[in-house]
Amino acid sequence: MKEMELSNDVYASLPGAALEGAAIVGCGIDESPVRIVHAINDFVAQPTKKSIFRRVDNWNDRAMPLGALWGTQLVRQFGWQWIMLDDDGDRSIGVFDAIRSQGLFPFEVVFQCIEHSEIPTMELAFNMISGGTLPKFEPQSFTNIMDGIRHIIPPS
Image (tube, rainbow, N blue to C red; front, side, top):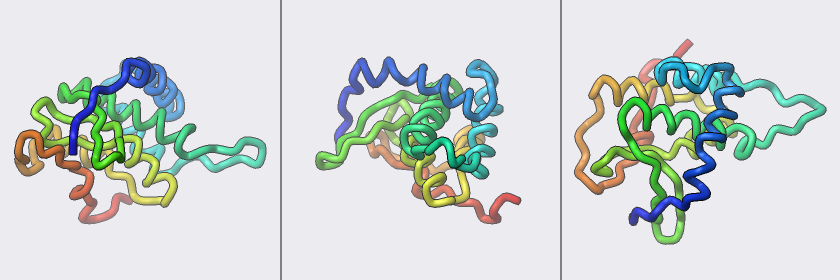
């Protein structure tokens, strides 16, 4: 896994995408990260139904804005950074801590939850980071914390 520079165009598009995400979940972009992550998690748990008049593209219309909004909260609350990782030609945008020991890929997580009706763990992950309950990972390991975050008892 190799870190690559995030292009200026991609980096510049993140605030607008996050603002769109805030509108989708019904919160202000400047509300607390805790409140925003809760709103994202709730929305993903029960996304609005597709209407017969408007087709919703789960990647462009949901994963991109909600992923940008979620990642932005990790940047705001924990000082994480947006990066691009290359894994043998497969490039992904994620947010990682300063020493690149842990992070996640918010666009992929949101997409998987919505596309496959999975129980969202965005709020759980946020709370685990905040509470310091994650294991310690080696610097530069680029550990995707979402690989190990599961609800023991699914939320009601």
